[in-house]
Length: 107
Image 1 (cartoon, one colour):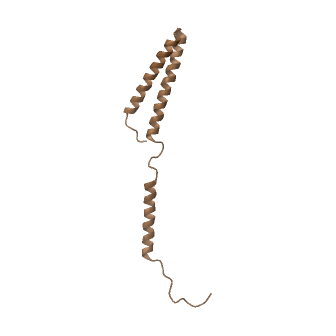
Image 2: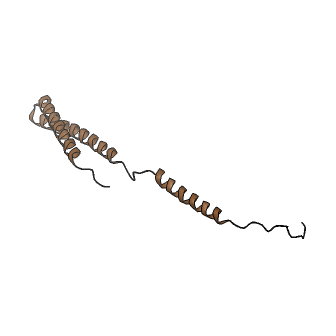
Image 3: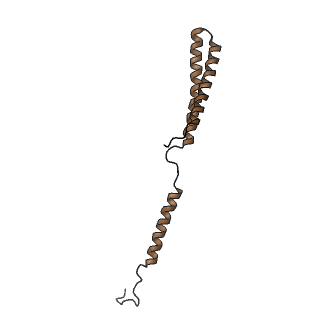
């Protein structure tokens, strides 16, 4: 608007402001890293729970199917089914115990 020069020159960037901005940037990066989720991929406990569930269901269903098939072939259906179910439960619990005794993998 006017062609006159101002009485004072504009203040340039101060070194303290640059240092403050750098410290803020570093603090933000550190805070983002600290608040980032620690677990990458699926959780180890979640995987172990899914494996235990699969072992239980597989043991029960497998024992029932094998027991029913043996009972149908031999004519001892209710007893063969019960024996197959019992063996399926035993195998399922044995697999769960074996899996729980293994150290966690590093995936």
